[in-house]
Structures are given as structure tokens and as C-alpha cells.
Image 1: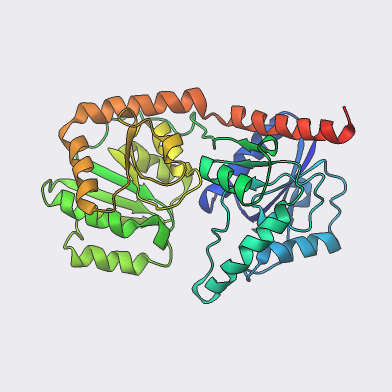
Image 2: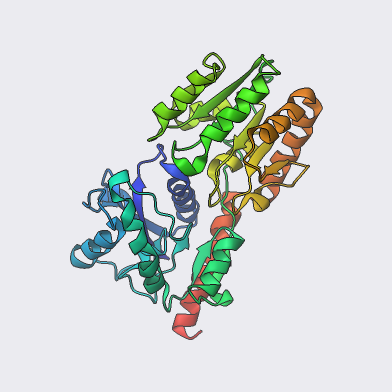
Length: 364
């Protein structure tokens, strides 16, 4: 099978958000099976021999639309059996018979501040892009419901899947965890991640337990605001911002942490949560769409729907006071990842869906 993947960013082993990791792992699994999988991306280093093609469109509003116009004019897509864009919006102008998008999110595009108003153009274009598609993939029940009710995509064309994780890479280390209790988080420093809530919660927690620390890996527009908040709360010596870290450094952070926390108000299926669980970490998540898919409440972690820092701080204290809870939740997290979230199984499910759609097209 010949598959073309369309995305904004491709530069492994550096990953920008979860989507770039997802397509890297899927491509690796499909290539193992002998399939041709080419990448078309705006931000990449082209290598035609390796099947990596650069689309020379700068980061402007409606970038996905300009990408497709360029492809229609300058690329030969007829050679592919499947066109695999990473959003509904990226499906615009692609052949509906072969286009099967991975709808990670809907109408949730984050723009640079001067271009925020462009997000209002996304929803109607998404609806147009999804008309008469042969199939799509998504990660959570909320997106499935929106696809059904607002975009009128029938259930038979929607396949809900989980993201995967390489649990052979992301695994507990041989060394014992640090004696110091460490709360870990990671992501882009943008409003919906609510790292300000995490910092306030940690301040309330560390007020009682002074020998703990908080590490937030990542970067973004709110970096200085978060640093200033840490300073105002007088916890400078307890909160650390290592910046954007590579995979090996992130792995060491997972292995050093006691718990992993993600207070985001909205997410698809965040890779950092799966990676943390693969490293035997309990997780504490906000009530975003896929949280119920990721956490076995009271067994592998907790879902906190309140935005009260004291509620989050109480959960941190629960783990701090019960080291055996950290151990048992962590072991259960690791076991569930190994049983249900391997990349091979995810890639096979998607590929089988591709095959079924191609068979329908051929009248088989």
C-alpha cells in the first residue's frame, strides 16, 4: 500500500506536540510491513530518497488550505492509495475517495495572537472538508459526537482509536526514584494547558510539604508569565523549567518523577500521559475529553474536574503521604499501557480500516 501523510511539522527525533510523534510511530510500523509511506510537511528537511517532501508554505492563516493548493499544482498524488491528513481542515481539496483524515481535534486551531480571528473560518471549512468522506479516525467520544451530530458523519465511517506508546523505550529505569517527591508536567506554555493552575496547586501543596519540587518541561508564549507567577508565590527554589527537552532527557524526567500531572482544559490524547504511564507513573489529569480513556480512576490515577488549586494540592498530598500508592498506581499504569496501547496494534487497526475502504471502492 502507498500512503501519503500530510502534516505541518516533521523533524524526528524532535517532536512538536503529540501529532508529530503519532505519525512518526505509525510510519515506522507500516514501513516494517513493507508499505510505502511518504511525508508531506511544511516544516521539515526534504529528503526525496527517504520519502520526505517539503511544502514551502510559511506559518500563515489557513496554512492547511495553502498547502493543498500547492500540492494540487506541483505534486503528483495519484500514485497513492491513501491520503492521510492529520486534521479535518487538511482534507480540503484532496480526493474524497482516497482521503481518510485523522481528526485529532475539531475547530481547536491555535494561532499566533494577531491571527486569532482566523479560527472562526475553520469550522465551516471543516464541515465542507468532511462532506462525503469515506472514513476518518478520532481519539475520544466527544469528537465522535461532534462528527455525528454537527458534521453528519455516520458511525460506520468513524473509527475511534487510542494513541500508542513505545513501551520498550518508555519504561521504568533500573535506578530507584529520588528520595525527594517530584511532580512532573510537560507541554506547550499556552492558556488551555493551565500550567498556572498547576503552579498555584503546587504552591499550596509545598506550603505543607517543603521537600518537594515541581518540574514543567516545555516552552511557549506564557513562559515569562509562569516564571513571574512562581516568583510571586515565593517558590522559585522549588519549581524548575528545563525548557524543550529531547526524548532521552524527557525519559530521565519520567524516571525521576513521583507523579505526572496535566491540568489541561482540552486535549486529544496527549502522548506525555501515555509515556508517563509507560514509565510507571501515577497520573493526575483534568477532566478533558480523553481523560476517562487514559485513567482508571482510583487505580492508575485521578481525574480532577475542579479548578480549585487546593483540590489538586490534596491529591498531591495523598501520594506524598502514601508511597505505596505511588508504587501500586504506577505498576497498574504500566501494565495497562503494555496490554492496550502498543503502536503495533494501533497501526494495524488503522491499516485494516484503510483496506476495508479500498475494498469498498473496488466493489470487493
